[in-house]
Amino acid sequence: MTTRGKTGTEKPFSNGGSPRTLSRRGFVTMVAAGSAALLARPGLAAESATSRRKGASAPTAKPLPPATPPSEAQKEFDRQRAGTLTTLKMLREHVLPPGGDLPVVFRPQRSRKRGR
Image (tube, rainbow, N blue to C red; front, top):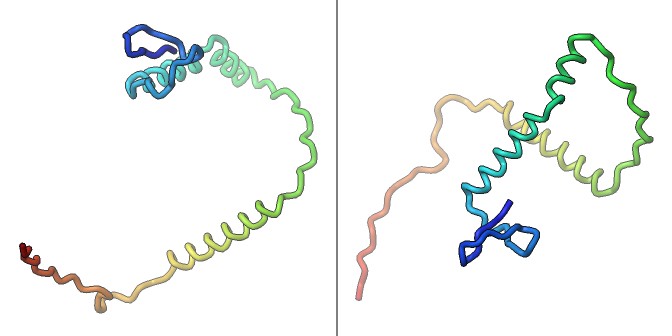
């Protein structure tokens, strides 16, 4: 990918061009081209289609190493997440009685006249 400098000449990002000079349209074009290239890789679609048709089993994967114990930060995150989910569940299941007074009443105020 290249960018246009102030003089209008194109220079690649690797040679000092700033990625911030890439326009939004250029960025979207680059992402679309990359996505199309991934989808159009020869053999990828054909390989998955033939393996599904033939009923071939997936290659055996290496066993995963034993899981490391979660860190203190991860434990705290999980604890807070569980508390938040419990609170959300309680709020969503709470049934409000029909009708009733509104807790806030909106009354428009008159605008103040500016003094000089």
